[in-house]
Image (cartoon, rainbow, N blue to C red):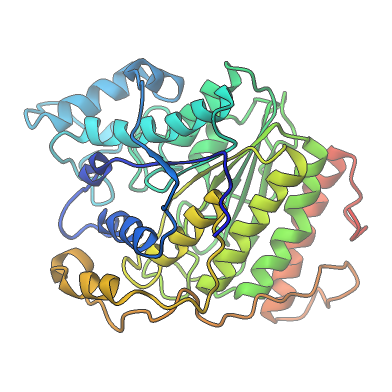
Length: 409
């Protein structure tokens, strides 16, 4: 296998300590299974796998207030006497657990390690599958996210040689925390493709959310309808993302690669396959190669089908970063299947049939968007998706000097 020579995988077992409870849907077993699958398939052979390096907790101040950090520390000490309600902690989404600050900080340190490697020129691509905590806000936790690793890394990059960064978020949920962090910063383009916010938490991410007065047009939101399959999702992506990213001319792309858009994810309502998610990952890599000399920082995110989906999709992600493109028909090693079958059910729930190959035979072909190609009054999913596309293009394209009616833009 030919490997991309300037790539880095950031990994340390400490990230497995980020576990809210035995019953919480975001179980770090998904990370363990991903790394084991990547190892067994030979994806990590000859690849630089590094532990988080040189993380200073002061960097958290780039994205989180001192008060909030103190609350996380106290809550995770097991001796909390403070009211955590205002900090988004102690609820069903974000229950308190011991050493919570240290575990969350390890995720930030991992993403920051990849960012620093790219800034130093020791890596062109880097990946941290444990990252992607895109809902965490400056003053509180949100949506399983305590600290916002992508926001910290982007802020650091802006102070260390970069002044145009594109953040692309393909999680089924809106990337609200990163958008909020850079709402009024014209140096950062935040792009989020997500399930229709009328139907999915956090119920934000409408095309009319465009950024603050000093950064109008740098927040881009592309909702897709519930149950959207591969082809429609890819049509939406290609109708909006490449054009605005090319026009923005970033020096680096940061990708949040949540895989909860899969049809079997228990928390969302989209209908992508492993093959569709791989196509999205490769599209972002190709865009980085085209517009910013390949500089690409990829992180994980959501994904709650812990056995059948996350390990395969994120092994594809690691492969894309290190230059090992895995054919979808590649068999899953029996060793990995034995490992998955041996895990306690309190870790993975009802496992169900174990996957046999690295793909699912999904149809990733799509018809490119054109303004005259649909009936805007039709009640079909295709028409709904195209209306969303048209609204996103109409809202943001003129702000970038692009024609929302011209499919070539």
